[in-house]
Image 1 (cartoon, rainbow, N blue to C red):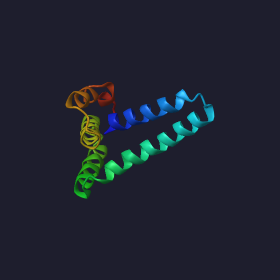
Image 2 (cartoon, rainbow, N blue to C red):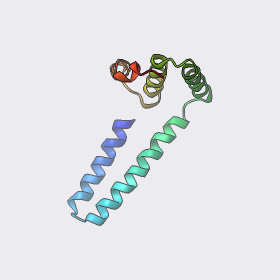
Image 3 (cartoon, rainbow, N blue to C red):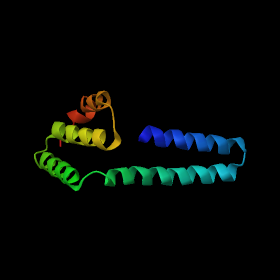
Image 4 (cartoon, rainbow, N blue to C red):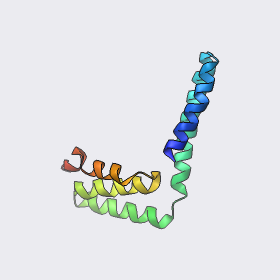
Length: 103
């Protein structure tokens, strides 16, 4: 989803840039930024209530236990599901320095 949104934005802004109209380009960039956020928010809303509830319950539990590794894993798995990330990206995120933080 993310890459499709970015490709669409880049295509249309590229066409706009050809016009060499700075006002139009600035307006297009601002519009696509808002549109991008709305598209991502809408995709999140399509996921079931149960999945969102389970994620937040797991996250709150990990936060209350101050388990930084479980916090990282929960967030990474949620991002993978919502944004369609590849497993390799999620694994790298979980191995990053973020998971070594102490809460």
